[in-house]
Length: 142
Image (cartoon, rainbow, N blue to C red; front, side, top):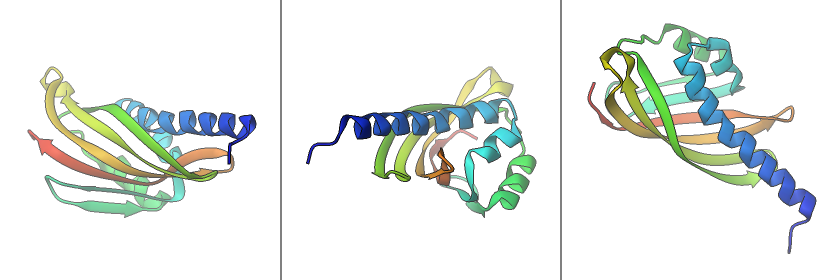
């Protein structure tokens, strides 16, 4: 069945709003904007990482606040997001991937690693947020 013009426009607006989340995430990490990062996640949002180094998982705003406030910036890691892929599952849920390149501000922006995020998105109060953000390091020079 063909979609209506209004539904197609709604989907385009949703896709653009979701694409903005990974870019804002990187911007807030760069600028050390803790409140900005936290506002990108749902109340029960999850962040996890795996690959090189110790794996960890934090869930919920209190745990996310503690994690992002205490995360050391030893090398001045500066994330660059590429290749954002999104699949809308419903008017309020979506999944996607975003590919990451890390550079070190402490080392004249030397490349220090690469990986990707497996993301789950949820529309809450008319605003798209990360429901879950799972980072997988593929290669690290750290």
